[in-house]
Amino acid sequence: MEAEAEEVETGDAAETSVPLEGQDWNPVERVILERRSVRKYKDQQVPEALVRRILEAGRFAPSAGNSQPWKFIVIRDQALIDRIERDIRRFCRVIAPMLDTRQSPLGRRIPWLIFQLFVRLKRNDLGPMPHTAIVGIATGLFTAFHGAPTLIFILKDKRGASRPEVDVGCCGQNMVLAAHSLGLGTCWVGFVEPLNYYGPIWKRRLGVKWPYEFCEVIALGYPVGHPDGMIPRETQEIDWYEDGVKRTVY
Amino acid sequence: MSYLPWRVRRVRPTYEFELFGKVEIDRDKCNDCGLCAMVCPSRGMSIADARGGVKADPEKADFSFCPMSCNDCAAICKKGAIFVTKPYDFGNYYKTLHRGPMVPPRPF
Image 1: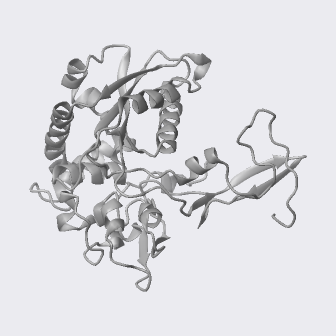
Image 2: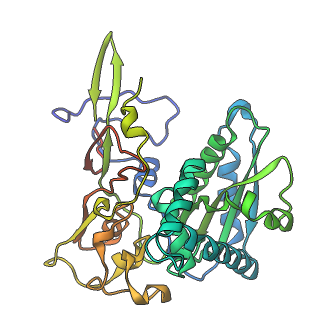
Image 3: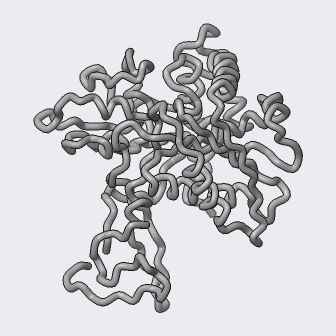
């Protein structure tokens, strides 16, 4: 693979391109590869100008038919964030005993039955991590928004072309990468999606009316320490079709 | 046509603890700064004073319950003393398919 460094043609417009194969990462690749989700923030608030820049990066994300099916809500009001956290905690305290077979006061069988029902109805919501998060938030081990001083809600417009969730993902990741390139920390919080149906009062309070729905939140702030860095991660099987041959690479 | 036989697909999802990821700390390199336990998304799952945001003692951290194998601990460690040795296996909930070994970014 790196036996000789060859001239590799990169696109004409790539100012950050790297001409030699196998050479060190360019700044954009470095931001992408060193990004880690941050769940420990300083109290210091992010300057408004930086948040505006990050939203600009989101604004220029690609979307199906350029429909841009998103709307942003920025919340930096600590009292309001605390209220949302408090409601999420209350909700989790009600739900956790119904689902947690390990330490529920309802015993083991009832939560097990409820869990078996719900995991067939809403399997994606009850993955091991969301399930752990519900119990963890209920017991106070962690908070939904990780104590971040700024929250960026990305609402999806349900009428968006094709799949607006995917477009929200592109928009959010643009913002995340811009934030990390500015030395900030971010964390995706998908836990707001249940608020659409379990916490409709918050749709009213935050003015989220049809055609918008809660989709994702990006927690933003100055990270404690230097959490970004390159790490090993699972390789995945890739089917590679070229010149009439199919290979499998990792 | 499916990568998993229907017998496997219809199995009820469960969260077995044995499938959690494994994290190893190289004690020779570790300087006990506690940053790994602080940054772990699950707070190492069992640190009493993690709620206060205090740098926790990695001795108290129960890294045998690595829930996501995110490697945040490895990223923040300045000494390179901690790393995920076995990624989290979702078990019956989500059978991981088509994965290879854990490797850092490769510039090819």
